[in-house]
Length: 363
Image (cartoon, rainbow, N blue to C red):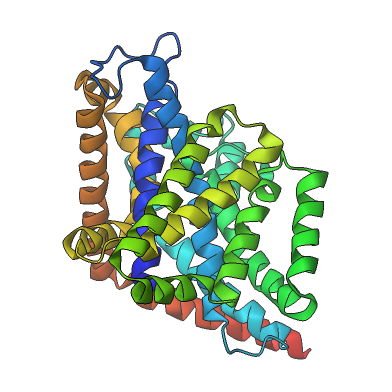
């Protein structure tokens, strides 16, 4: 359901924040922190931080799953209709991203940078790189980006257009053909980020199309609390163990392991205790803000308030500060979006673009 997807996004954004904050905790020059009984050494903290890298896989999984659900009971023979739907999703994503980009690029001097020379000392290059970054394509073109975590925008845009055709391929040729295509692409170049996440795309499509998570949820409701909680616990423990060894996992196996982790966490969410409705509502709320939190969190702890962030010493306090401040900024951004009617503007732009695409297709 939409609710469970948002809970998964909450898990993903929390892992992302922890990953970015602490993955280099054992590196020379990293700020000295106060270590407690749970996170007792820099090496242990860094390992937990590196575990959080699975956040990207969870976002990819949710994207593939949600896209597949949106095409349930829909005929996919019309390629133009598929392209139009993908275009609308891309425009909506870009408008949300570009709105944040404009705000934070205007605040560029706060980080000690100059608008006219941020990307390059050449004014022309600076403009070209800014335009590429503005459209979320810096990773594809291998050009500088304003925010190091924004590389994912290139992957997100690619997934918007790739996943529907993967679903169509799956429906026409079956699960084994899609698996073979996934593994072939994975074998050819697993070091390319887009290829690396193909197993998560595969798992998301298959689970959604075959309604496997819904069936697991129905089984959990019939099996009773004890069996449901045992199954949820086993999935959670398995996912955690795979995550624990993720930093030491060979890159070729890592993408497959991350796909298994996504399955484990997804099953844990659908089978999780129903009595924790308050916690689930809170997680759902955070999940709705995960996109904005992803856009802005690096500015807080790395660009503007790095010294203050790590001066808090306690990893728990550092994480809480970044989490709360990112969420607060997201709430403010949403208010601004409502004020300028951003969703309406995005819809108008999508309508115009899709109209032009239809006119082009009829020529």
